[in-house]
Length: 289
Image (cartoon, rainbow, N blue to C red; front, side, top):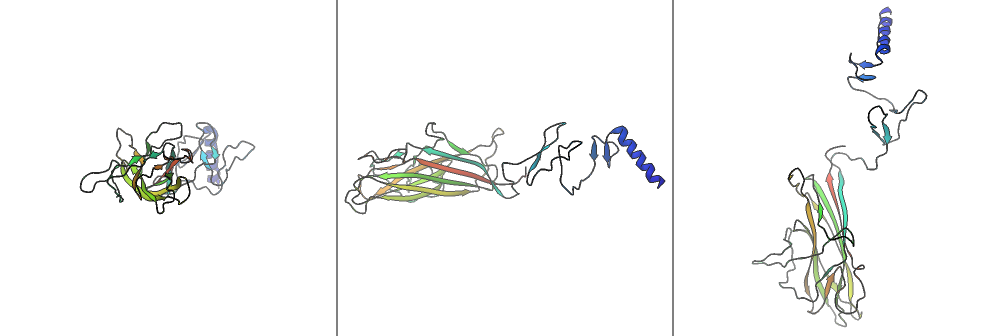
């Protein structure tokens, strides 16, 4: 018992003269210096005083440093917490186009109705020629100049979710039956076709005016490669939207994507025919931070 009191006396004397407590160390570098692990059985309270016990925070808050000689504070994160191998959105954007593409009543040659993954935007010649696509330039808003739509990939496990929607219009077909214009629109990444959908707009018998329809393309591109760094910077991928007129039931029918046709009486305007491209880049979480 005498030895125990003696040890306690020297411990208190050490604390009094040094104003520092070291656990598993004889040379503490702060008021409390723990050389080892800590098991905390209850809440951690911060910002206390002589008369208050401090703030324990609330569920799911994080402790944020305020710098030297200032107590940390509990803060609520505005972003959700992610676990390893979950996916998180790393980039999200939306672009518009109000100028559209007017294909007039031009006859397409050659007529090509099948597209393949990685087809070039500029088309191809040779034994199986493919016509070039017409670009629908996407931009941040109606007042901005058209700029390249880009995104970056940092993780080889990724998904890029595209949604493209526009309106199309064809000429008044009068009393003729079974009249149509067939077309296709696609999404290109670095000038290679990654998503495409073909459709057709049909004339309405006896409508007495031009006909309009909605076109929607939704597609997910998976696991795009991570581009090597260039001078310490990760290069981006460029995105384009392209459309082409394929064929029609008769020559002479005008056709437009994202804008009114130039023939006949105008019943819609460019705002009503506006095109929208929305995309989200999601990548697999590998680091918790």
